[in-house]
Length: 529
Image 1 (cartoon, one colour):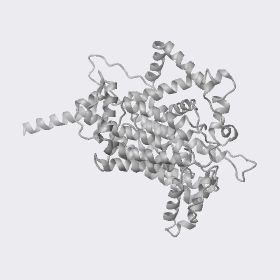
Image 2 (cartoon, rainbow, N blue to C red; image 1 turned 30 degrees about the vertical axis):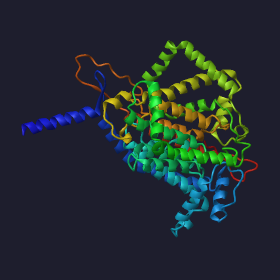
Image 3 (tube, rainbow, N blue to C red; image 1 turned 60 degrees about the vertical axis):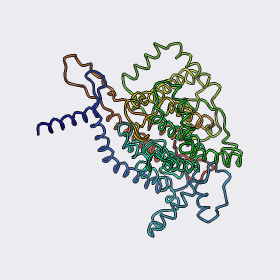
Image 4 (cartoon, one colour; image 1 turned 90 degrees about the horizontal axis):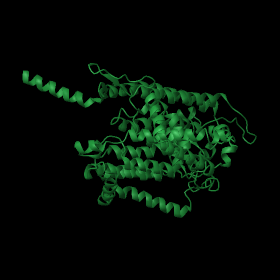
């Protein structure tokens, strides 16, 4: 009996060692406790958040805007055209493929199977339910939950479903929700491999990515990122990545050739089909090409980083993090000044001012550009905004680098399948993330925050909050002190959810309470992202 007890204590000690990480002498992190808290708080808060969106959706769609709002008139009319059986008719002002209208047609048919539903909801509300269902059910349960189960200390599904730039469109009939749903679903399948580490999982992932392109053409770029993730994670297992940067790039390239049929071909088919679309359409934009022509809008990248920095505030802010930025200034002074000068040159020569931006006061970007970003005073435009852009870039790059996969760990431990690897990027996929972000937003002449939804999600899923206190300072333990100071990221995760909900609430109140008239619009106009 004594031997058995000793064995049990030894096994228990090994389990405790796996969940408790010693970060420094006297400082530790209890992963088991954090994961338990994450699951409990997600389970308890999800019904409350669901109730909030259901109540506000009912009020907004019935009381605030029981009419087609901004671009909804194009999307609604095209869907009604399909519902009337006219599948060959197309509105030339629509710039995206018909994915939303096909899905809206399907949702309309399903909803109206229930007899009393037809009397409850108007056609407009029925079609808006398409996005509400995608954002509140499909996104958190079928897409974010499987990754969360593998990385509960990284993000919470209940937080990301409240992401303000996306949740705005739960109330409207726009393409953004399901564009996000399908491409993130492709990523989830690529990371979790639900059918096993085989071709069926990869083909399923590529199929979802292809469907996402029916909602937003630029998702083809994120298809390339997902392909790199798939090849990379398999190469880590088979080729054994190490700390030699160039060697890993070479191993990735060799592995992509060796495993072309299984890992690359499914996504390559998507690229071929997209190339045929470009040849047929003679542009990436459908319909109204004149107002959506591609260019080099390089400052768009800094707009994106700034939005992500503000929205991710609870993840990174701490006294230590701010000190690190100041230390960088001190240690790399000339390099930092050079970077600021380059940012100022980008502001000067690569800022595109689209006519829609200056004419449409129904978007927050109108006021941001008028009062801040495009301010005529050079002191604000250059000497205020350039440091903000520089710091935002530091936050974006810093968090993803801090969350990078430890390749030494992958060589020491035995991972038989790629889905067993941590949900983290390497230096290769980190570079791919930045490149894909550039290719999706820089060519766009429009300054619209909804273009930053996918750059945020693909960044946030692989970023873990720093486990430092937000305002307090971690005490330095004495040498003879046995008590350990425990750090955790739970408070940051909770604050992230509250932060998102607070922004959601403020923007919703502004949307409901503040309205104004347009001479060529029949109904009151309001402000959205």
